[in-house]
Image (tube, rainbow over all chains, first blue to last red):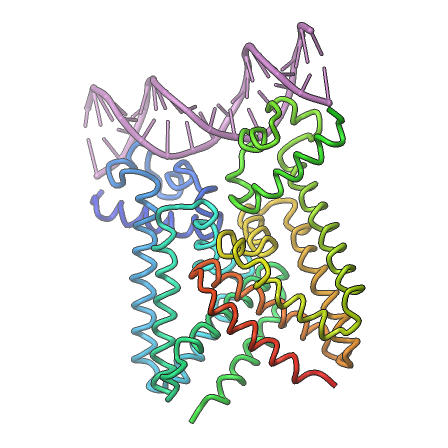
Length: 188
Length: 188
DNA sequence: GTCTATAATATGATAGAC
DNA sequence: GTCTATCATATTATAGAC
């Protein structure tokens, strides 16, 4: 087995397990089981569990950058791009109902653990924040672009949290619709 | 030492520790340390760690009911009561910055753990939901009172999550102001 | 009701053979 | 690069003395 490939499979499995069951609750044993390697083999690829978390966050950052870039090429209209972001909670509805938002729940857990990677997890939020800010600036709201970005971000987090708590699809549809209506009032 | 008093002190310490460091991360050892009892003594008062969690959620439910009742007597105006709810994120800003919303973060953790007390934790949300629904009904919006309640709930959760992630006080002030403005448009 | 002692297990991490 | 064997520790939980 190629070393880099094993490393990638560890990151991939840990990513999913951290999301579904939380960082702390995910032991080496279950990751090893998912990747089909022995527990001892881990330490050839990573120094510690914390280092796996670091690699997982790096991978999520890269995936998020790629997603945002893709949206830029797919949609020439900044408003359409923002709508794509707003609809994440609909597109990922099943996962969010079961496990919440991957970014929001990770930052919350790491804050409680006072974990060294807490800042890195927050930078996942920052990626969305700055991208949204750019879109609002393009729409002619440069003066309050960051505030609008945070507004959208906050709303998405709120919907995700309640979607996870109540598993209510109607709620998600309704709130997403309202946020899109709010957005349309900001268009030139 | 009185038995009931010890039990109450265990619940109180566990409540704080579960909130600050998460349920799973909080061991018997640290609770015992906080309450100043031995680990073995726990099992005279509770069958298991899960049972402590159950008691903590019960206590939180009782405290929440008391708070909502207090707001009813303090403020005769339903709009004023809703504003009191909205301002929770300001009143508890320091704790929320450090540990997030006690309800939102607990439900999220228990969902990931697929924990038996998950539904009980969600009922904390339901308490606020139904209380807010009643206030909106009193304001003459009985037809969409639940949707409005969930809107306020979602927003508060979003603000709490971002307040915890970014520790940004201005964001909280700004979003709370906006939500209050939105509320004033609903008044008769 | 509270304590000490201890069981049974799971955890993150290391050593060394292949 | 992967494995087995193992360490040191932490965890929930129990047994029994006081």
